[in-house]
Length: 129
Image (cartoon, rainbow, N blue to C red; front, top):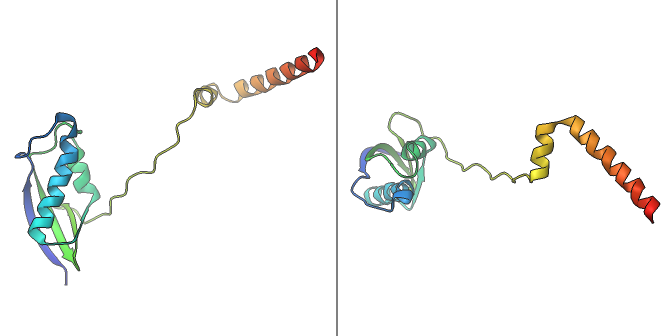
């Protein structure tokens, strides 16, 4: 049977390099939940993650209210007032090169012009050989 508890997790107490504070705050939340719930695995919800990172990497909130549900050694934590929603990182997109971005901006006419130029260059090279 799932066991529910509400915790207020203090984050302010820990000092860390300014740029890494929110990342460290997530680790503090995990450690707090692991210690107080005696669980093997901790899963943080999407809203909780957004709340910690809401003001950027440099200024996490001083404390967070969390609803933790323990079920078979796994704790699922979410911001108080929200239902647990699995957090998945977005897949990384491949960066486009300068040429692809330029062609995207210029549109189909530029592509037609470039193809025409390539044909002309190809014919010019054939004549030179």
